[in-house]
Length: 346
Image 1: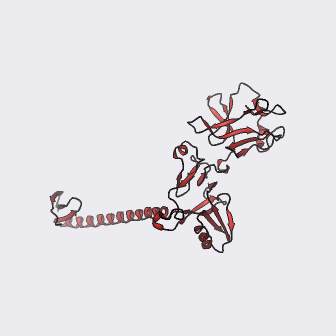
Image 2 (image 1 turned 120 degrees about the vertical axis):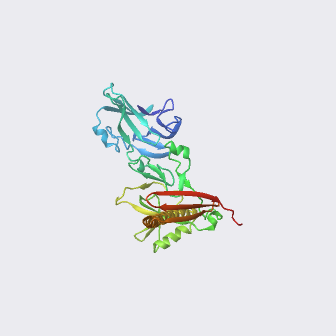
Image 3 (image 1 turned 45 degrees about the vertical axis):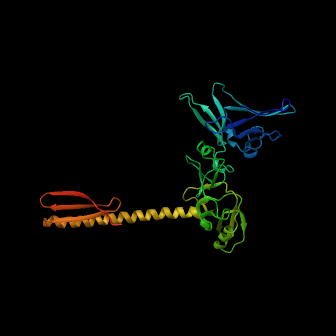
């Protein structure tokens, strides 16, 4: 593989990612060689720096110390008036090896296994995608060691669902409902509210302001429409304006976990409350049904011992029908149900 510039011809040797796993058109990431004497390898996301190998010292790149222990490759660099490039090759040409720039921006070196003839992952950079700037886009959260690295913050949804499903999460997430301060007619005029997001690595680039309490910190963010979130800890008020990037969900018990409050439209919080109320009503209904069943069973047992008749009538309002149950309990049990139409008086 060769990365660099042919200064005479004005050509660039670079590696470009696919747009998605199914779309081979040029994607958001590219690997390029620094034209200056540092001979760094830059991983770019568009025009922005995504990852760098560090300076070449003649043997390894400063940010890739493991190169000292990889003996199957030989490296070569050149920097002169005609060209500048970095290249590598294998000492053993019989080994099949390739370098891939993934749609996620990871550089992966793969070697073909002789026995299984499958590609084995040999090396990759950056190792932790959650550390990459805005990997999950605005208002996305990143979770390490998860099948799905990226999710949207509560109250948000993918900006570009099709790209998101194809593992391109760079577009991030957008609000499901506009804030009241943006759209005065939204949510019947109810003021925006906050929802707790806990056990995370806080978003990048907060602004620290003076506030005497958590309530004052919340009030400052609520009364500033551009404020997206706030956090109050140790008498320090931090607020975030605009997009939230690099929110990382940490595992339970991680001492680095922090909490912040994200601003949402009142309608989003009301949905959450309605869902909770529905669950409560379901539990109450089930409890009443079970209690009724035990009572009926007790009455049934009483009449069974006496060998008497038991009659129960129930009105079903939807179709105006009366169901009558006549039970006679002697040595054998039988039930008969009859339905009779009922003319309702309007």
